[in-house]
Amino acid sequence: MSMNLITVLYLIASICFIQALKGLSHPTTSRRGNLFGMLGMGLAVLTTVALIYKLGAELATAGIGYVIVGLLVGGSAGSIMAKRVEMTKMPELVAFMHSMIGLAAVFIAVAAVVEPQSLGIVASINDPIPVGNRLELFLGAAIGAITFSGSVIAFGKLSGKYKFRLFQGAPVQFPGQHMINLVIGIAILVLGVTYMFTGNLVAFSLMLIFAFVIGVLIIIPIGGADMPVVVSMLNSYSGWAAAGIGFSLNNSMLIIAGSLVGSSGAILSYIMCRAMNRSFFNVILGGFGSSADAGPAAGSSEQRPVKSGSADDAAFLLSNADSVIIVPGYGLAVARAQHALMELVEKLTHNGVTVKYAIHPVAGRMPGHMNVLLAEAEVPYEQVFEMEDINAEFGQTDVVLVLGANDVVNPAAKNDPKSPIAGMPILEAFKAKTIIVNKRSMASGYAGLDNELFYLDKTMMVFGDAKKVIEDMVKAVD
Image 1 (spheres, rainbow, N blue to C red):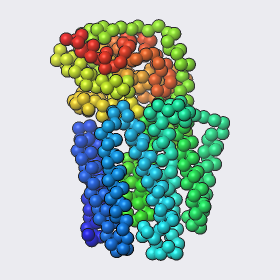
Image 2 (image 1 turned 45 degrees about the vertical axis):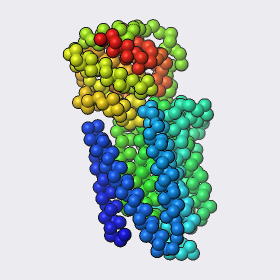
Image 3 (image 1 turned 90 degrees about the vertical axis):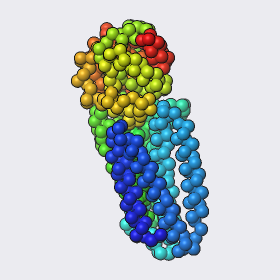
């Protein structure tokens, strides 16, 4: 295969990646976007294998066998995980994938530093690595290390299964935290520049160690409510790590793909920050979310009276309404109740009730979590509305049904300037004529805050597993 053909194939793969991002920008075209992404990545992988084979033949090496084994092992593991993963575990899978991308960037950078001649960076092992390549290796390795260790912490926080304090949803803070981060950040820059100009391997190794450490330190102070932003931020980091390594290897495909992921992840992080009233630069520095859990003490919500009802009561209110807005949250995903919800909506619609879904940008634990959940249940796209498109309709809506959502409908964001989430845009469910909230208990949400919505006179709490409650509603509507 000639180098000209390889360049053309990489160009076609790049176009597929661009079309993938375009398709993923809207639910109606997301399947097509995924198809373009798979085609582009498949073409890029096959072209790269062909390129390695060509270079291996010229250099009389047998490295292609290891590449194929790696492809088979990695591809098989990825397929098995993707097939087995539950919808509620998708955020953890994404965090895991980000960590692997970061670690791959580190491994490639280390290999390039130790044996640059094997990757075509220099002609002979005795030749020094050019300064420009050292800069690229420093940046790719540092960002990759930060992405790996930060994604590991994000994985632990998202899973909620580990008792180790660093993996808890609550922020981990200690005196002088920001100053320590600043010192380590400066040390990384100094060591990286030292390696760039001198090629000192000790400086490169120390830089990597500090990068792994700061990856942990910038994520542990982030509260659980901000994890959707963390996921998109780490997505951006993984892209820039790949792009940095692409420059070192002179691989145009890696540069383009990494740049697309990095820039799109950064844009998504900015959008998510606006949705949560966060500073974009604080996100980049990892210094946000630390106050998100400063709500009332756990259990304080249990001492306040609320109006509760049964699934039959909720079904009666829904059946007699002219308009209903459903606000899905992470509790709906945990209960796997999206299909039961679809059945309920079909019955309500058949009875003449106008039903719409309201989606908050950070509902769930990753960007677009609720959109994917509803798409899995084949909810018509025309019934799903983003926050800015539907907030004006809550005041004229008869009934709002909140299913497992909490922080994204908390009126404190608008009414309490002292609240940790003050200024955060929310779905204005509190404006509806009647509000039905389904939760397992009165426990606080992921931000650790009490929700004033639950105590309004027009709010009725229906306690229980979302799937069981919705199934009971379906029967009651019948």
